[in-house]
Figure 1 (cartoon, one colour):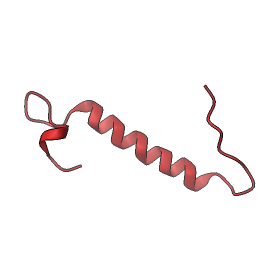
Figure 2: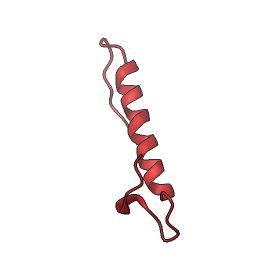
Figure 3: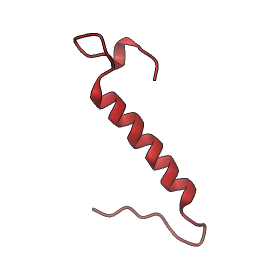
Length: 45
């Protein structure tokens, strides 16, 4: 993640929620890549 104004907090470091969003996106891609073609990905909850 690049150090940009949009992801910085008030002390000039990367905001924790920006990091959480990046991790959530990465894990979503991992789940999409590992679900077999014979199954459907239907998140519930």
